[in-house]
Structure formats: structure tokens, C-alpha cells
Image 1: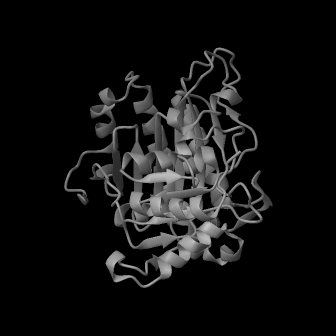
Image 2: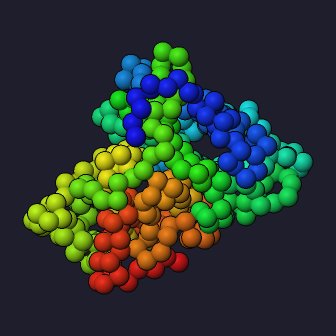
Length: 343
């Protein structure tokens, strides 16, 4: 699966080559993904030199989620908005950092055919400790016929996604995406400044030995999750248990590791977050799209994440995502011991 840059096929070349796989196939999505990759390169550069310049720490305010805004959050948000505005393929953006949707232009005849939902810097609270961060993005075709775009353009279930992806800024930076025809990963080669195909046709192992969850909230989890976690910790040679607990606290990083090695990531409801904590449109949906395209599963406990119909751009949802057999086992525990509902 891992090619380690034996090929020099770049992201742009790959997107153009695969353009016919996309049902609309007129080049706009090609340019849109290219715009995202340009912003990703700029953010990669800043993340990698963050310890050398005054770009670490917080800006002294909270975002719409009630989370402290980091300086690099603001920088990443601005870079992706600027790149999408320059490209002209998008009429509006929904970002974790902005309470309302962002209109690309004030023109009533804006002809951008897409809307983008994004978490510009996932895991930014880990920046100061030099832990991997990431960007998550989801692309939909607008539902309105013309104009600046409106809220209804965003309130589509994940089944309507035309593309979803993430960039992970780690020991190397990778861009992973799908348009519904499998998942491919591209590693940034700093020597040429290009994302190059390194992980073609990524598949999540059907099973694994890693579970990822913030176990500090154990007492606040539904009973089905508690019982599943105890199952993960039991000795059972036949099923290779106990599993290893691995939790980074950056969803992109945890998901990426589990996708490569096999594993499960859980962020269930808690007493303080009865609807879950992670956001549906720009965190859970794009990663669920990737998981399913790579042979994995993504559920909120009783149904597919991708089938949840959002009511607002910052809706939250519980999520269980990763290797199919592990997700199914967790679902079994939830359905046996807990009531699962998303409203």
C-alpha cells in the first residue's frame, strides 16, 4: 500500500488523470482541490516553523465553539479562506472558526458551484507540545441555483458529499482525499514543493489492535461504551486482546494512524456533551466518507454518520469510526446496553 514516493506523480497530475471518475467532470473540482493543496503547503510551512516565530499560543479569545483560539488557528483559517476565494469555484464556506457562513463575494450572480466546510486546524491545542495537527475539509455541490449561497447549501447529509479529505501536519505532511472512488494519500515533498502520490488506494484493515478514546471521561460514557472499553482491556489470545490504547487528542492524527494500522476511534456522548462533541459537517462527515471509501465504517452508534441530516453548520454528533469489525463490535455493545439517538 505504501509507495514512499517511488512515483513522481503529483496531486495535480493525479486529480486531472482521475477527473473522469467524478460525475460532473468539468474541471471545477480539480481546481478546487488544487486551491486546498496550495493553502495546505502554506500552513505546513508555518506549522513547521511555529517554534521559531511568534505564532504559538492563543490570541486571548474564544471561537464559536467556546474553545480558546490559537494564533495558528486564525492563520490557517485565513489561508484556506483566501485560497478558496482566489480559486472562484466556491460560493460560500463554513468554518469551525466562524459562527456564520462566509460568502465568497457580495455579488448576487456568484456562479461558484460548490460550498466547503472545514476545520482549518484540528488539534491546535497540541501545537505548543509539537504534536501532529491537521486540516479537515468537506466539499458539496450547492443546492441553490444562483446567488451568494445560503445556509441550505450546507445542510446536506454526508451522502451528498462530492469530496472529503484531510491534511495531517506531522513528521511529514500528507493530504488524503476521496471523491467517492477510493482513497488516495499524497505526501508533501519539500524539495519540489509538491504533494506526491505515496499511498494509492488506501484500505483500512478490517480489524486492528488499537482503540482511541479520551478515557478520562470513562464515568461519563454510556454504559455500552463502558462495557466495550472493558472488552478492549480483557485478556483473550484468540482475538488479540487486550488492545492498545492510543489517544493523541487530534482527531486527524488518531484517525490517520488507525486507518494505516487498523483501529477504532470513539468520541461518544458524555454527561456534559449529550449530543457528542465533534462537529458533523466539517469533522465527522469527511472522515466518515474516507473511512467508508477505504472499507471501514463510521457510525453514531446505531446508524451511518453520513445519513445524519444537519440542522445547523456547527451541529455535533457522537462518532465511532475505523476498522469495520471493531466498529460493529462497539455498535453491538451500544445497542445492547445503551439507547442511542441523534436528534
